[in-house]
Each structure stands twice: as C-alpha cells, then as structure tokens.
Image (cartoon, rainbow, N blue to C red):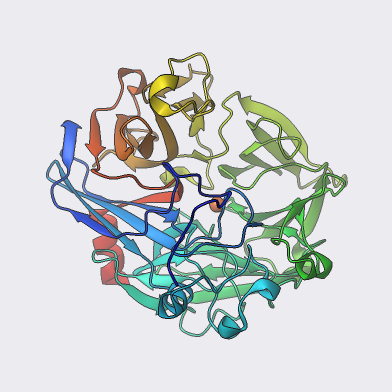
Amino acid sequence: MAVDFRGHPLFPRGFNSPTRFEADVYDCEVWGEIPSDIEGTFYRLQCDFAYRPPENEWLPGFNGDGHVSAFRFANGSVDYKGRYVKTDRLMAERRHRRRLWGVYRNYLTDDPLVANVHRGAANTHLYWHGGKLLVLKEDALPYSIDPVTLETYGSWDFHGKWTATSMSAHPKIDPVTGEMIAYGYQARGDLSDDIAVYTVNPAGHITNEVWLKSPYLGIIHDIAITQKYIVIPVIARTTSLERLQSGEPMWVWDGSLPTMVGVLPRDGDASDVRWFQGPARNTLHFLNAMDAGNRILMDLPVSDEERSPSQIKRWTFDMNSRNDRFGEEAVSTANGVLARMDDRYLSLPYRYGFVGNSDPSLPFDEARVGGRRRVTNTYQRYDLMGGPTSTFFVGDTQSLQESGFVPRKGSTEEGDGYVMGVASNYAEMASELHIVDANRMEEGAVAVVKLPFRLRSGTHVNWFSAAELAEQEASA
Ligand SMILES: [Fe+2]
C-alpha cells in the first residue's frame, strides 16, 4: 500500500509535513562561531509520522513516531545525526507498510494486529540518567537508545523493578542528590486512576515506590520537585471509557473540573499526600518549584481556559494552612507555553527562566513565509530578582521551538551559559539551531547551525555535556 498524506488535516503540504527520513551531516555549516567551550550533545525529539493517522487525530498531533535529532559539539564544530526510535510500534507498521495505530491513546481504535505490541511511540522527551539515554512517551515504558549512534536498544523497565505500565515523559533529576524522581499515571493500564511515583538513584536503581489514587482521570503530563516535596498537578483535560468507545482521541478539556495538586513528601508514603485545589487551569509543563519555609512555590506557564493566552505564574502551597486552596500570581508576561531554566538549580531557589514568546510587534516577512501569522519569534529571559527581561529575536522568517540551557564550561553561576534551540525557517524551508549567549541575548545568536533540510516542529529538548555523559556511563 502506497504512503499518501494528501488531504490529511494534520499535514498541509509544507514545513510540518512528515519528513520520513534519517540523516547524518558531518561538520555542519555554521554561520558565526561556535564557542569552543560548548562540548556535549543537544538532543531534541519530534513526532514524525511514518504512516498516515486517522483523520480525527488530536491536533497538533502528538501521536507520531519518535525521531531523535542529536547535535554533537566538539572543538567549535558540530555534527548532526537524525534517527527514528525503532519502537515496536514503528517496526510493526513498517512490516505491514501501513498505519496500524488508531487515534491518540485510544487502544479501541488500534488494528487488532497490534493488540499485544508495546505501544510506546518514544516521541516526547529524553533524559540521560543511570548511564542510559531514555526516550519517553507517557503511555508506555521508555526506550533506551545509544547516546552516540542513536541505535535503539529496546524498552527499559529499570532492572524489572518498574511495576507501573507506563512512565511519564517528564521525570525530574535532583541536581543535589543526582536522583531521578519519575512517575507513571494510568499506571495499572489505560483509564486506571493509579499514580506510581519512583525514586531512582544515580546508578539507575529504584530505591522507593509510592502508589497514589488520582482524584479524577485528568492528564498528569508533568510534575515538579523541591528538596522536600513532589508536586503532582492533575489538569482538567479528562477522559472516560465512553469517550474511547466513541472512537475519539483520549483527552477532552472540561473547564468545570478543578485543578487538583497532590503534594507528597519525598520521604513519605501514600498516607502523607495532601491534595490542594483550584479552578480549572490549562497547563502541561512546570518550570520549577522550591521550598520557602512552610510554603512550596511553583512556577509554570498557564492559562485560565483551553484557548486563552498563557503566562508564567507562581502557584503557592501553604503546608501549614488548613485551607486546601493554592494561591496564584503572575511572574512574567511571556506568552509561550514552553519554559526552561538552568537545570543545575531545579528544585532550588532560582533566578532566571527562559521562555519562548510571540511578539507581534517585531518584523515578520509574510510574503516569504506564506502568510503564517503567529510564530514564536523570541526567547525571553526573565529575572525573578527584578532585573530587566532580556530578549533574543530570531528573525523575520523563523519560528523557535523549545530551548535548552547549556552551562558555560567551568562556571557554576546560575544562567551563565548559552540558550540553544531549533528554529523553523519558513522562507528557506530548512531548520537551523540558534546558539545565544544567555548574558547577551539582545546581541543575537553567536552561531547558527544551518541544516540542509527541514525538521518538523519538535517536542522537547535536553542538553548533556560530554563530561556528564562520560561520568554517568562510568558510574552506572
Ligand atoms: Fe511535555
């Protein structure tokens, strides 16, 4: 059966059509100069549909096949490698040369041929921990891949100790202890209301496991950690057996539901969890959280309704109060939904957030980019100490994807380093990686890595230094 994406609502021909290829570029073309102190690999994931999904797929389509891009930096040069994760899911479709999976996380719409196949698409996020590069998708166990060749080793269950049926794509790594706090939800199978929370030591062994019940079947895409607590928000995007039986993708927004936030002591068990409550909020990703006396502060991009603009806000949980409500106040006016930080300060008091932002007042060459109106044309660095917001403007034909923070070699000062992210250059129909000095964002990119092809819009990114990769490989 021939592959034909024509007429599919997800794939207007153009920048975000499936790319369906793997690539190596030795010694990429670079405009500017790559600082020689950048040594390591910038990993990014995209959903790259190998086969055409059903037409009622959930926009913008997180049900594609995981495709890893690795930009490997050494001595002022960069090599690119792009590979599909060779999931059981993708390989089953390749064998049959057609789409076998139904709509987003709805097993009732899958082809019976794949009833017993691992459904993980490995398309959301990747983490380096315990000497393994894990590629994650929240409805299944992760895949482990080779950090250099990107060869797929297979799915990973933490030496048989991960008893949940899924692992979320957003674990958190504690920069102080080196532990990974990870979790699965719908953790006893699709539609189950179980949450399993694990602590994994730096060598990759599970040292603690706590099972909780979710207040309702809402999405739990991300969590946050402090040095004392794990913060688990349940968001008003919900599902039911009836919904799956109707053939629809898993999630639907329901603004009548509350936001429920579980707060679990890192050394506690299920009886220690405390649930806070607030009005429905639309959010998926959390930037950071920290302890402040008896309170927990958590910063996140969030909006009030499903389609209203996002803003960075701070939620406050008072552990001494008998009130089960959490507080909310604005932190920054940036309107992007993906925010990152210097991860060496994750779970700790921090100063800088880096967030994508759409600024319609900046130049935009509509004639050359085919009339796209809303693009992420800046990265903003906001300063919680009250300093000015710094802005990097990418250019008038590009849109930025999630950024990663790269610490300057030898420096431990928060925010001293580079902000790096892939941009879609619509005029050139090609992708580029922009490298920006985090202390001089207004000056523009110090280097732009020009790829001779386009990548689709990405999901998440992570930077791992060469030293970090070597150290973990040795310890695991
Ligand atoms: Fe995510």
